[in-house]
Length: 121
Image (cartoon, rainbow, N blue to C red; front, side, top):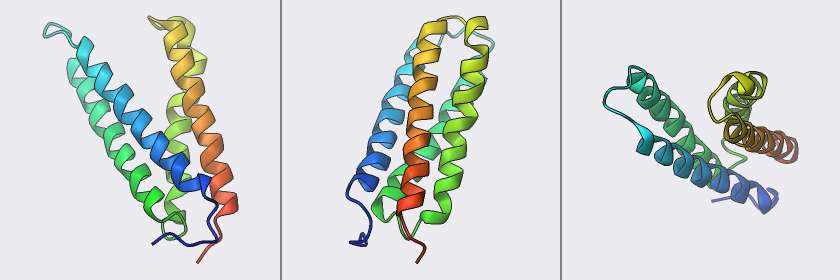
């Protein structure tokens, strides 16, 4: 049960982050070519990132209880967002990568804001 001291937007933010992540990750699997030597790394990335979508969903279920995990969730967003912005020009589909990185960094800002508004138990 979600504590009533938690602002209403906090669980919604984490649920939206989770749903967005699942959609983006699943859509990235549609481009896989059987001849692509990077296929393994892409599938592994989707698996690890997919696990984090589940973590976001769990945090949304009770942000106060899972408050200690919010910094880890924030790091996950920053760990993709910052390098993607820095190296976007060197990547194929640079504008798409930049947009996705910006969204992840925006989600990270929301996670930090949520951490500040959810009091420790």
